[in-house]
Amino acid sequence: MKNKPSKHIKEKISDYLELPKEIMLDLPQLILKGDKEIYIENCRGVAEYSTQLVRVNANNLTVNITGSNLNIKNIADTQITVYGKIKALEFKQ
Amino acid sequence: MFLIKVFNFLKGYVIIQIRGCYIERFINVCTHRNIYIWDTIRRSDNTLLLKISIKSFSKIRPVAKKTKTRVKILEKKGLPIIINKYRKRYLFFAGILCFLVFAFVSTQFIWTVEVPDNTEYVSKDEIMQAAFDSGLKVGVFKRNINEKDLQNQMLYKLDKLSWTWTYIKGTKAIIEVKEKTPKPQVVDNSVPCHIVAEKDAVVTTVRALNGFANVKPGDTVLRGDILISGTALSEVAGMRFVHASGEVYARTWAEKTADFPMYKITQTPTGKTKNYYTFNIWSKKIPLYFKKKSPFKNYYNVSNRKEPQLGKDNFIGISIDIDKYIEIVNEKTPLTYEQTLNYAENELRKELLKNAGENAVLEDLNISVGQKDEEIITVTATAQFNEQIGIQTPVDMTENTENISE
Image 1 (cartoon, rainbow over the protein chains, first blue to last red):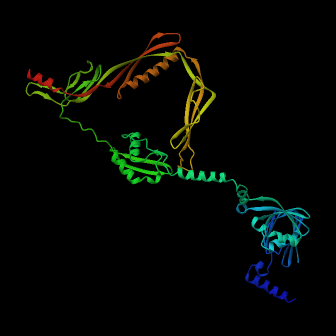
Image 2: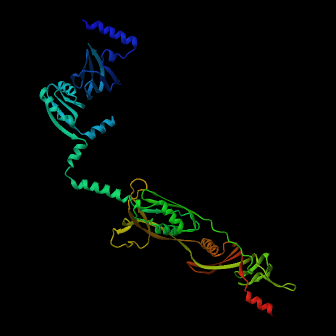
Image 3: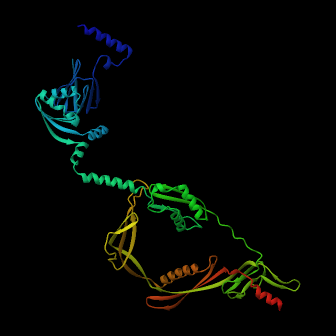
């Protein structure tokens, strides 16, 4: 409960000073290349991995990538690139 | 990215198969332990293919144990694997090393000497010889050549040169020269001389610049006749000697007879060829055949040379000479009488012009057919030229003094 107001403040500050949010709020940064490839930075590992669904943990968020023929192009400590035919992206708190 | 692929290839990687229920966990543990994974392919619910570098493969065993998955190597790829595979082929590596050494050593010598061929007063051979004498020859060690010294020596040896420049480009030594302009000929006017006819002719014009004209247009002269005299007997001054000069133009004739066949031979290659190869190594010839003999009756041959080079201008002293024999068929095409005559006229005109003097002008050409055969005709061409026939000859002094004493 204590964390919540501080986050608001952080968001406000970053809004006000135009600082990058992904650093201030520790949010994942996603780069999509059409429906072929997605690059996620600042993530915390793979929660689920199949050719139809890849779930990636990113702090408070979970990114669900659905599609077909999904595979991981490369994966390192805080970043992951998934390629295949992406149909949908979904964010869950 | 291509560069990353190249990097991975150089470092070497393995394609492994992971089997187990906790594949996501396996991936997460790997990433936490700084094991880089790429190009994963999900085969089925409990199998995964992935690529991993050779170096981090050793770290995978504890991870597999922790996540209860089984690891199987499917393929090993990359440069370290290839090197490892051929590790025991000593001769192979020795061969590579030998080749590198050979290439390096053979590029340290001069294999070709290039000489300009547009020189006017100095022949190519002379320059070649001078360069040879100065120490620039095929097969000489490159480092031993002192270019400056060589240039000086060349200049010293060849008087006709005013400037030389030698430089080495790869295994090629290039010589550049600048020639001296020769001294102009000084006419010695003090020596008395006649202008004498060079050949039998009929005089057309006489242009005496100095001396006394002995002939007039229309005169027939024989070879050796004095055209413009350098001596004159004057009643007042006695015998006078001058240096005669001038030009005498006269009509001359030349004749040429030749047989001409009434057919034309055309040569067409049949397509059959035979090659003979000669291997040249460091200017030594090694024939790659036993006996060089044309396998065809009618043939012509073409020879060319192939020189492998290491980069530009780095001829390594090895070349292959190819002597190609090409079979041909001679075909007779009959010509009409007019065609043969036309051909004969052209040929004879060419021949006559070649034999005539440099400044001769062809005035007339007469063609007459001597003998006519079924296949061969004999053609005679008579050419009339107009040319300068006077040449300077010194006056024979003894003869003239005798005249005076008389």
